[in-house]
Image 1: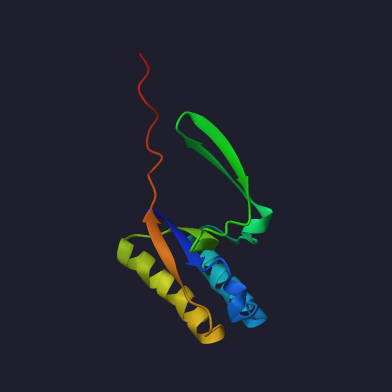
Image 2 (image 1 turned 180 degrees about the vertical axis):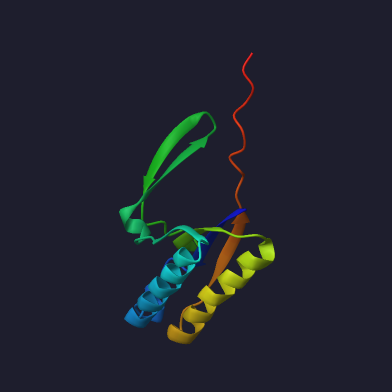
Length: 127
């Protein structure tokens, strides 16, 4: 089963100081370990929302809003897609990541949301 894990924190996370290099190094090492074991499908960090945009469909109109997203209470700062046997295994992996944040960046507050992805499954039947 594939799980999407999203690390979320306050939009103004830098108020708790910049992420320490030791955290980046530890996350890289965790990713390498997970890739070697066949668990890691993909992972990455995301830049500040000031470099992004939101495209929204609402009320019959599509609008674009450039970042930063000041109304956001929390934003996704990084993600991973992992191939794991169960939700419990996904929670275990997320705990490792959050433990690195707690240990190496104690002023930061955030969470890791875990979501089961749909399987691709077989193609639909043709008529």
